[in-house]
Length: 247
Image (tube, rainbow, N blue to C red):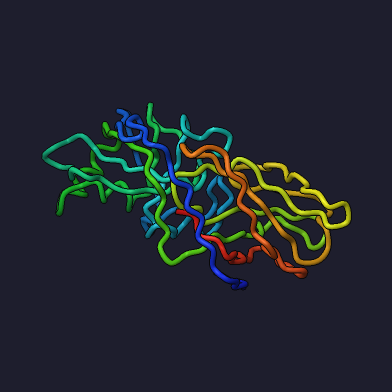
């Protein structure tokens, strides 16, 4: 995914406390959006760009009630439809990459994700429903083989304006805040959530930048530090790989 930097790998295990409610499905409805290739959209409200089009084999979704000011971006759900003669028991595993409203729905799925709720040879029949009753469950994200990446959003302007989205956040974690280390005054400087998953800052400090992001899950609040997350000379549209994996 463009230029990347590699470091000694660290795996952060944010283990949830046992909570029976996290295994309870919620009833809702789902629909799908138009897409000529069946994939996600790179113009999603999360600000993920091309990542939002293809992540998780394009099994992605837009949400509305679950949006929570963009905190839902990058979270993962199991969604299964409730038409026994058409739908599988498992349904589909999706990553949230967009905001989307439908006809009293919680999920607006990519065409590929919507079709994968169906039994073999039943996807076309499922598409004819347009909107279908579903059950959904928040599940840990699984990004095997990927470290957390920090994508410099395309709207960034070197060197005076930096906007960053955090990609491949594994586990069942919400990214609540992002901060940048300011070496001259030896303190963490908060970045502002611009929209979706994108946090920004005007006039970032020079040199390689250390970032930390706060995640919230059933394990509580945790700050995760990524040293040298953004290089001295960064480029808009490029995702830089960290040394971190979340599980």
